[in-house]
Image 1 (tube, rainbow, N blue to C red):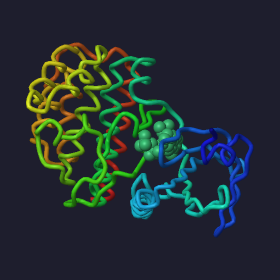
Image 2 (image 1 turned 180 degrees about the vertical axis):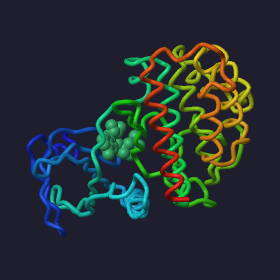
Image 3 (image 1 turned 120 degrees about the horizontal axis):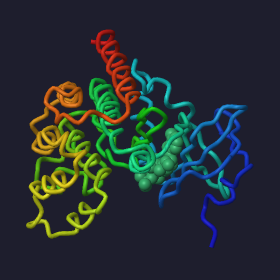
Amino acid sequence: MTTWYEDAFRPGSEIQGKWNGRVYVVERLLGAGSNGVVALVRRGTVRFALKAGRETVDHQFEINSLHALSLTSTSFKGFLIDVDDMIVQGKEVPFFVMRYIEGMNISDFLHKWGKEWIYVIGSNLLKKLTELHKSGYVFGDLKIENMIVSNYGDVDLIDFGGVTPKGRAIKQLTEVYDRGFWKAGERVADESYDLFSFAILLIKALDQKNRLAALSKSLPQNREIEQLYAIIKENPVAVRIAPFLHQALNGQLKTSREAYQYWRSLVAGKKLAPSPLKLPWLKICFAASLFIFGATVYIYW
Ligand SMILES: Nc1ncnc2c1ncn2[C@@H]1O[C@H](COP(=O)(O)OP(=O)(O)OP(=O)(O)O)[C@@H](O)[C@H]1O
C-alpha cells in the first residue's frame, strides 16, 4: 500500500505552491508521522525543510506559532519561509517551508563528542527558551526529538506544534516530559513547565541504562520525582548539575532567565565539583556562548 505522500515526496519531485507559485525540489524525506511529513527540499541552491500536514487544525496552529515567532527580534526571526497548499492526488494539502537545520539529536551528539558537552548544550537550550519565553510563548512539547544540535553544541528547536501562549493550557505534550505525568504540577503554559521538560530531556540524554523508560511504564500511583533523583545520582555528569535538575523538577526555577543564570553559576565552577571539563575548547565555546547571550540580553532587555 502506498502512502499519500510517497509520490509527491519522491527524491527529485517538484512541489509547487498553489498560491505563491514557488517550486521546491525534494531531496529526501526527513520524517513522516501519521499526520504530517517533513522533507528536505531545495529552491535554487538553498535547502529548506518543508512540512506538509493533513491534520489541518494542528498544522495551522504550528504555522500560527511559527509566524508569530518569525516576526520577533530573536533567533527565530525569519524561521518561517513560505506557507502554501500543494495538490496531492487531486486534494489540497497545506504545507509550510522553514529553515533547514543540520545536525543530530542530543543523545547522538553526546555519544559522539562526549557527555561533557551537555554543559554547553544545556546553556544554549536555556538561551533558546529564554528568547521564546520573552516573546510570550512556552514551547510545550520540549523533548529530545524536537531539538537539533549542530556544530559546537548549537541548539535549534524544531516542531513548533506545541508552542502555547503563556497562561493557556498546554496543547501538545509527551508524557514522560510532562510535569503532570509526574504529579509535579499543572499542564499550564508557564516557563517552569518548559524547565521541567528541560530537566527530563537532560536526564534522558544521560540515562544510558534507559531507566527512565522503565519508570515511565510504572503505575501513576507509584510514580514520583524522587525516582528521577535516583537516576541523576547514578550519572557523574548529571550529579554535577543535580542542584539545577532538582530545582527544575520541583518547580523552584520560575523563569528561564533565572534558570540560565543558575546554570551558568553551576557550570562556571563556583558550586561545582573540582574536576575540570576535559576539553579546553569546550570552555572557549561556553565562554563565547555566554558572551553572545549577555550581549543579546543587553540589547533586547
Ligand atoms: N527545520 C528542520 N530542519 C531539519 N530537520 C527537520 C526540521 N523540522 C523537522 N525536521 C526533521 O523531521 C522530523 C519530523 O519533524 P516533526 O517532528 O516536526 O514532524 P511531526 O510529524 O510533527 O513528528 P511527530 O509526530 O514525531 O511530532 C524530525 O525528527 C526532524 O528530523
